[in-house]
Length: 101
Image (cartoon, rainbow, N blue to C red; front, side, top):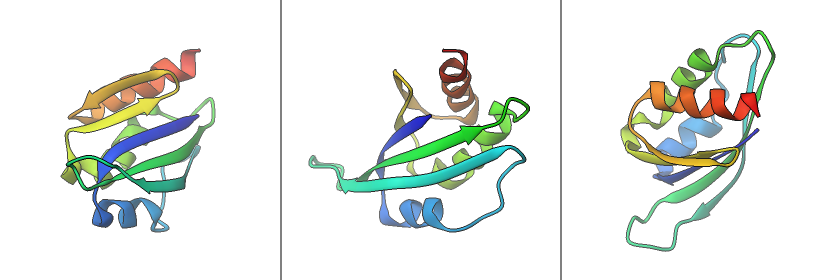
């Protein structure tokens, strides 16, 4: 599934791009980062998230959240649903919703 997140600063973007151990059954790869052209002076990041059937949406959401929480609240779009996210449970809900489609 494709995840879009904005606005993220350069430090958060670097954390997302850094190779770090992920929960079992999860693969996460940033695809692009582009400057957001408004007053936020951040980046819009598009990433790919792959989860096996056995992978936990909660664990994946917590892993992503651990990297982006400094930028909270973050506007995140997972699949076709976009929301302002301020906690990992909300991100897990977005991931579950995209998985159920």
